[in-house]
Image 1: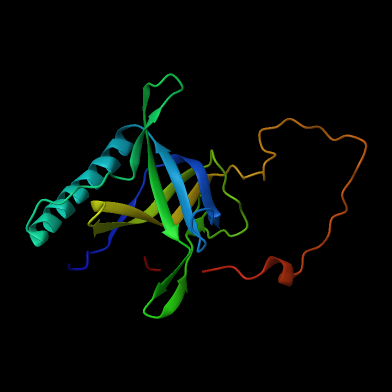
Image 2: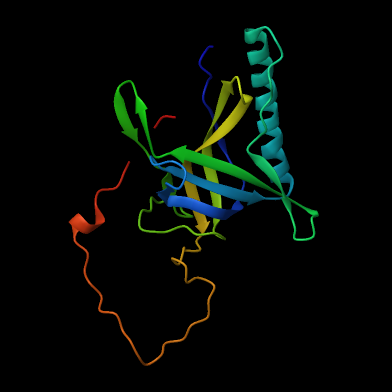
Length: 202
């Protein structure tokens, strides 16, 4: 099957849901995956999802012609948001992801999303948490497998952090005051403690 042309898109502004953008998620993949769900609403969200649907329509038609049969059509990486009472809210969550490491032509390639602030300055020392307002620059990657069918994945390449809510390591959202009592002694971390970071494909 011929190689698909890269399609670049930029999402509307949305709210981050369970982001792993500063460090990859290794829970289900030991190589790590950078990922985020972006909650979107309104006309811009509708236009964004409609464009994805059109790209998938074209891809599905092309694959079916090449395979000389109608192949399965995978779901878009888009879900309707449902409230606690089981009603649609009118919002959607769009899933973006990027493999932190993969093998290509005999070499191991590492990659990570580029993080930018609201003024498009590169940032590296933030831990983006749920509730942050983001825009995502992605590559739309059409794929086909016999089991899943013709589908799209959205590779998270650039993230603009417009309003940052930093991940608090499990303490965010709880109400604590300073108290007299136990105090931990801060220990400076060396370069050996922190290790090297990872730095475009797949």
